[in-house]
Amino acid sequence: MIITNIFLKQSRRDKTHAVQVTPHKRSAVWGISNDRSAVWGISNDRSAVWGISNDRSAVWGMSNNRSAVWGQLGIILILLFFCAACRERVEPPTPYDIPIPKGFPTVLNIPADNPMTVEGVELGRLLFHDPHLCGYTGAAPDSLMSCATCHRRECNYDLGTDNPRFPNGRACGRTTGKPTIHNVMPLRNLVFNHEGYFWNGLISSDNPNPKQRTIEDIVLMAITADDEMCGTEAGAVAAIKADGKYPPLFKKAFGTEEITMDRIQKAIAQYVRSLVSGDTKFDRYLRGEEQLTPQELHGYVLFTTEEGADCFHCHGSGGSPMFTTNLFYNNGLDAQPADEHDRASVTGDPRDRGAYRAPSLRNVTRSAPYMHDGRFKTLDEVLEFYNSGVQNAPTISPLMHHVNDGGVRLTPNDIADLKAFLETLTEE
Ligand code: HEC
Ligand code: HEC
Image (cartoon, rainbow, N blue to C red; front, side):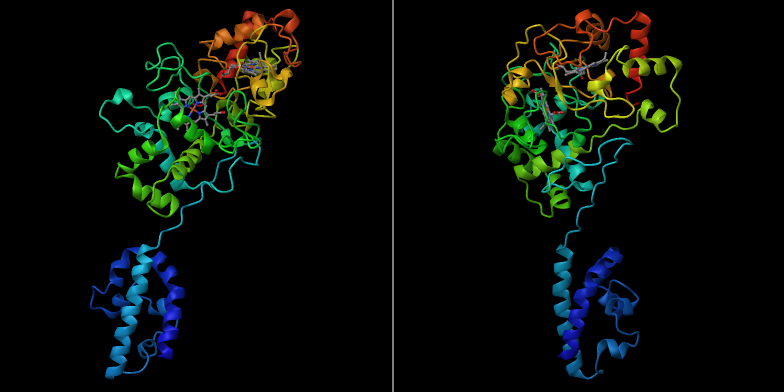
């Protein structure tokens, strides 16, 4: 009996190790083979399993007499019990390492209760693109909507002017047709943003409403909003449960097959945080791997000088390559800003009237339509605005240095160079 106990302790300790080493031999644990080493299984190197000795008598203890045989059977049964338990054991998910581009902040915006894992990101990717997430399992595909209906990969996770679902270029609710209050935002490098999400920064860690603080919260808001997916929490969970492919994926990501809204939110948020842009032509130029053309280089100089295009204070540069500060400015779109959902609606500060988050200019060639209300359909229209259309609003940012001239007043050649530089910020 004493020997048995020693064996059990030993086997408990070794079980994990041995099963991980040769999982394909797990069936042998169930005693299929006559080969005794196989019955005890897992490894042919018995000393590795038992950790005692290669001498069989030592392993089996005692001798060939009958009580020993019963003892052996007892051990087998107990071990089978433990091995059944170890069959249930779930491999922990693999930690997901965000590739941090050179020059980016190294402090990431990841809530402590939702660490990123490879399995979580993969599950989130499927859910993000799953049109049943709106909670409708019927057959009419037109009535379905996923996150990807509005955040389209080929459009830098923005809407894209060429999205046929929304003919007027403005996203709207699945069943209500109600337009979203703002243009869709690109979902890139959100994990590096600590200043707040949405055009006005409403979703941030200091929001008094605990349901409006994180990307996890945005997931549920998007599912239930009447100008977005028009679903319900229960409907979305039921629709995802109805798809047999999900339970094993939830188990891989979260340890059990249980499907809850909390887990759906977490997985999708992990996927959104994994969307990092850090390998454009300009990044390769910064890393010394590729050269810019003289035109692109001149555009870069214009971008980063006050006498030139003067963009860098709000949109970054080689020294701040996120190409946004993620801060809020009024860039002079309107003399009298009328939108009630601007930055001032969040801070209560009248000086924030008409201010919005400066979007990142990464992949900017793909994230049309532009600005919080999608007023510009092309990059050329945006550049013409900064060149000659800037309005002197009472709350305009002091960083819009050329407002008295109505803009930066560049030559057509300079505008073309600036555009060529902006194109180097787009991933292939
Ligand atoms: C009907 C179109 C639509 C759908 C569907 C949609 N979104 Fe959005 N999303 C928007 C709009 C519009 C905004 C900008 C909101 C604002 O600032 O007013 C936005 C903003 C966001 C942001 C903030 C980005 C930032 O940089 O601040 C995140 C994150 C996001 N959406 C994730 C999702 C997820 C996840 C889903 C699916 C669960 C989803 N969205 C579904 C339209 C949509
Ligand atoms: C004072 C800060 C500031 C300066 C300077 C500035 N911008 Fe902006 N930019 C913003 C803000 C804020 C927005 C969003 C405004 C809105 O949606 O109402 C924006 C929006 C944009 C957009 C639209 C992006 C999108 O995805 O919708 C582009 C493109 C852009 N800026 C390029 C430039 C260029 C090029 C320059 C230099 C000529 C420049 N900006 C100078 C603050 C600034």
